[in-house]
Length: 96
Image 1 (tube, rainbow, N blue to C red):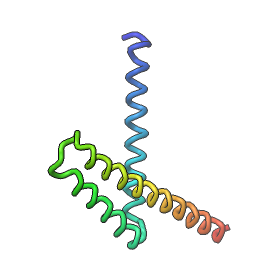
Image 2 (cartoon, rainbow, N blue to C red; image 1 turned 30 degrees about the vertical axis):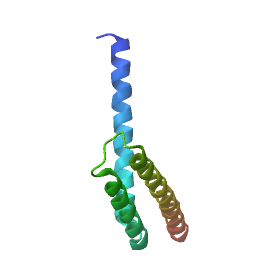
Image 3 (cartoon, rainbow, N blue to C red; image 1 turned 90 degrees about the horizontal axis):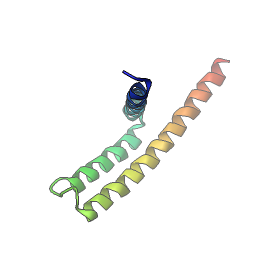
């Protein structure tokens, strides 16, 4: 195997590992989200499933509803990530 054959393979493995780590971190974040945030996130996921079920992948209206819902979920996750960082920083400053 040449170096040029190995590099793309390593690149794909690294991407997969990074993606897996991101997914795991988001899963943990969702698991520990405040109950109000979790309720909103679950409702958003339910709306996405509703837009997806019974519609083909080429259904533009359904896809647009799913993308809009993903944008809302992404915003909520960003806020939760920010809060988690603030909570961690507060805990660290109390420990010091």
